[in-house]
Length: 323
View 1: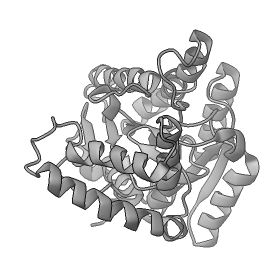
View 2: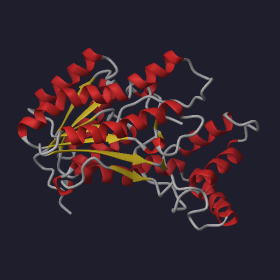
View 3: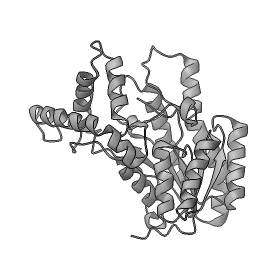
């Protein structure tokens, strides 16, 4: 299917590595001109250069979206590079795993600032131009934890809930403008599996990451209708479709790509024994395939409905959403 993106400019926040990079590359492959955002010039330019080398059009914008001045500059530079952004993918955020009593209010505020207000800044900076041109797409990545929070993802779940509210409210505010606003809510994305499992072990009494990871996977997949994680490519391709003119009737929606993970346990029809057997087999395959997955998708982040990465190292927006 031709997604008719050839004359569209897209900005993906935190698109300089990991799943954000895959979204950028997917949009470019579908014909869009892309602006790669990040906090590292080197990483953003590496992605843009690779896209240009393959025949695509790509520019970069670098800045910390948690700061008003830098976010405004990113929006201005994006507009100057494109003469108008048509597609805004809000993908940046910061949510390392912490329980209720393991972080301070200041830490929570910093994480929230790097997520929800960052998206709002980009919306306010770029959507008025979409309104003038009579066409646009705003896609907020995140939302699944608003329906299925857990004890280690309080700040992420709160941010996800707000993103869903923003999606619906903004879609109503932009009624009859030619602009759609939607959320794409990833579930358990098969990236950096070993990192996730080791974090599970760190949070457990045993410290055995294989056992802890198996328990974690069992709990997650037993509550869905699929016996596998979702792939980064599935997420990126859904974003590309929602960004396209082909998706003009989808507006104000939260599109879950999670295998019905938020369903109640027992609704999937699989017995506990069957699920456990599948998990044990899947765990072995995932761990042995970790290197292959990273080589195939060019990714090394972690996604679990909330997006995981260490931006101090990778130059993103203060550490993206993580387990």
